[in-house]
Image: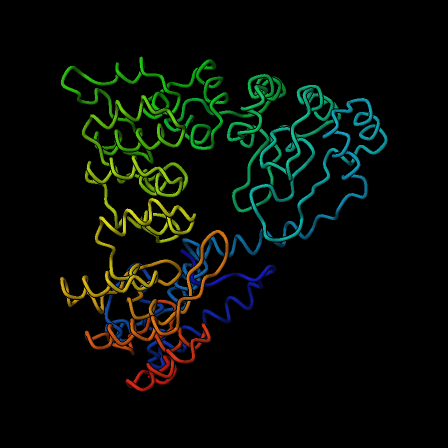
Length: 492
């Protein structure tokens, strides 16, 4: 998860300056710089500050660290994001785009055709030109026929196929792409569009786009994955009719028990392992991922069938989170219990939020799941500190005293200890920010310090526990830390 946030209109020059500043701080022996590098450089991850500072760093290394702090895999990806903004900035809003879109939303084909005939440039005009840039940035009129994303409750018109034909007849480029970080064509938006699938118009729209020359690769092993992950089953079904081959994931997501049963032998072994990202998956991973597809798509008979097999129940790959994350988020306590009985990892943080299922339950205010897990599971030290669960903190410290200084990627702070989270005064959920009682935070910080917590360990965001307390305006906690010798990262 990103530990820094890009401004709305980032400057590549400023980002290069930040990388040079990090490089200079590393050369000057900065503890904060060492912690940031150790948290984000793949070749130095987890190294001690001394080892990181002893390692020669190049500008390219500093740029990589900075990119990963901002949530990008590489400097090239970060640079592309900045350049995307520059590309989008080159477009000017069309004065009649809103008028044309209103005609489209109303299903007024005659009005839309008149507007396009009166001003042919409308068919190439772009909208959504302001940051933040998502996958629908710089969209044309034609991109809107997919109904993806949902626009403020605006439904697709019943005659959307006729409206799409009017736009194409006016000269729209059927393979034009949006210009967001995850750009896509109209076909790409359609095959991942829940609204069109729910409305039953996906197939006719796909056929029209294909007739006009749209590209659609049906031979890829993962051709159906995105449709099924994004609740667009009608798209997957039409692609199967057009020649795409359903595998275990498609069978599970579509609830096709006939296909699913045929994929196992009499002993319950998977007959054919699917290929993803250029390699064959293990049978356990394939079964686990298929179960996740089935659970996300609420194909409960398929879930039951697959849970009787030997699977990896911690698999991710259907948007975010494993099955237990999704169950916790939805408040599905029976599924949470079932997965725990099957051996699913309650500490799984394999998602962009570095959060366990317990955290997902808390964030969506699923009190029944949260309370049950707190009562029946060993809440780990970082979460116990973040949630102010003092009894769990005491228990974890008794069981594993060394855990007091263990660093992990937790929530928004990479390579953080429990003390970093004890120093922060509040916790968030879908309804907002909730401040912990100050006395509890003081007791928690004291408990961790007495157990041997090092107040001067620098987290992967370059901050000590004192820095974090001050950033959160937790003055009493900051005073307590100072009384125990804690320093700011800049003073180390």
